[in-house]
Image 1 (tube, rainbow, N blue to C red):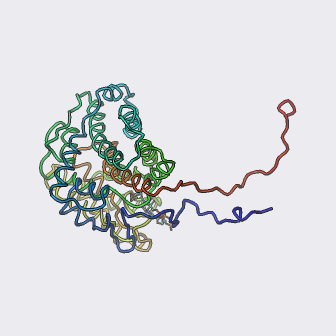
Image 2 (cartoon, rainbow, N blue to C red; image 1 turned 180 degrees about the vertical axis):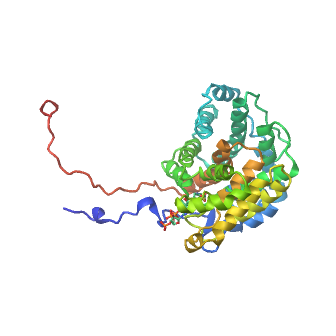
Image 3 (tube, rainbow, N blue to C red; image 1 turned 45 degrees about the horizontal axis):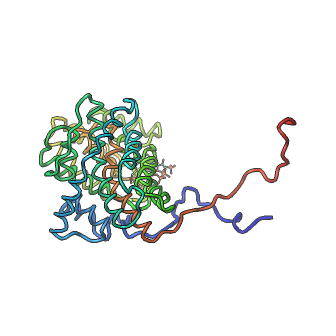
Length: 384
Ligand code: CMC
């Protein structure tokens, strides 16, 4: 007998399915617009800051000057790690990929965090700040330890972006570098119900804690279909090698039906608005760098795709990771850290989504249409 449920239509990959409402971000793929709580990311990137963006996503409104100052201080004062966590960082095998290491570190952080399981609104605001602040400290320390160098302790007189660069590289960043890092962090903070955010919400919907949700989200982000594109885009530019190689490489890629990394998007059918902003930051950083050729190369390749009928017909445009990888490169990050840079910013969105889920929770528990064997006769072990 076929039940009602068994007749249900299966939507693979949940493509086009609305599973919840959210007030956090709106992605308008046709117009190429992205809004956080109604504010255009262009305005937040140009006139705001990462701290303002985090406040907006977590508290629901833009902060006043006093609120922002207090919030920035609280975030800065949340940067220090329990000493034992450095031992965990030193103990991890060197060959562990940075994302795997950080997935472990977030989980470990919960073990040293009092009240990690608390899910009241006040507790979750604290945990969101703590996770966001320490994520940069742990990422930077991981890198320094792997370089055979001492971790750099956080400073609380620097912005979130500047302090991260300071801890990672061991020197204060230039104003342009701090600005580019801040813009990068604003732009990656939230993006609807992408795979890692959905994972965070599924975990939160069991009324599990924020650390578990972020650990789970990192596991989802790690896959090459999600968080890996920024690294792949930059490695592609490095593989091409020089602007003059672009045309031949592009023709070969077309012939081999190879995907151009950093091009195309499931939702945006025009320019990804984040790509436009990061393109400008990459241009500025390239002009101050002694390796301006990577920006020139990327521009040439983007132009080839934009002019080609194959890409025009399919409405494939540069996405955030195309220029995000370049910005990360010019900021001195090794490509194997790019997925983590995504997380350094998206942790704000993940934690905001956990709070939104908990504010009006409903267990997320879909169903699968069973297509396996039915009612088989069990054969005892000795008779098989
Ligand atoms: N290069 C060449 N062809 C492409 C590309 C590309 N980058 N992207 C899509 N196509 C083609 C694809 O081959 C297909 O052609 P056809 O119709 O002849 O079979 C058509 O365009 C539609 O592709 P699709 O895979 O059905 O499109 P999708 O919406 O499922 O894929 C995508 C979106 C992002 C996975 C894809 O564009 C892609 O693989 N891009 C490269 C990887 C990348 O940059 N990923 C980062 C995404 S942005 C991250 C974020 O928002 O956080």
